[in-house]
Amino acid sequence: MYDESCLPRIGSNIKILRSTCLFKQQQFAERIGISQTHLSNIEHNNVQVSLKLLVRSANVLGCTLETLLDRKAAAEWAPEHDAEADEQAAGAKSERVPETAAAETDEQEQYSLEEVRLLLKLLQLSKGR
Image 1 (cartoon, rainbow, N blue to C red):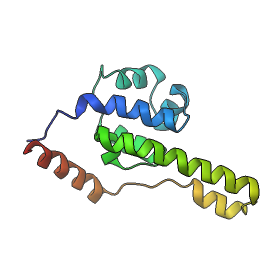
Image 2 (cartoon, helix red, strand yellow):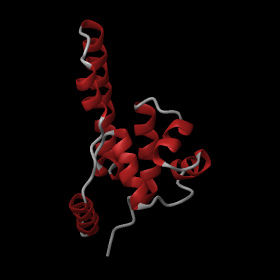
Image 3 (cartoon, rainbow, N blue to C red):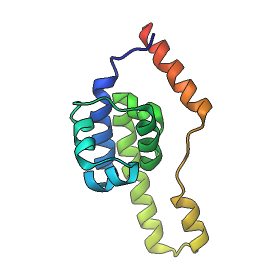
């Protein structure tokens, strides 16, 4: 059996992480392929989020699936992401990046089927705590 106790926190975590990345609801919803209304319902924990949307969200945000599921991981990720963004902005001002390097940085991590399976095992193990 899987532990459902993390489900109510997922929407809140998505909202925190989306805000940290400075995405408006409409922008983020378009990037993950849903309506702004559905995203609002997810963020307010009115609906459950599918694994497919979790994976899309993690890829767009550039975070791990664990970060979306775990409040502590989300809280730790937000300041780290801000610091990285500040460093990148400072580096961009001082040095012009060739277009090929910039394109590589824009690529987002994709999660493999094996990583999704490990996530499901993690959820299963967390129930035993």
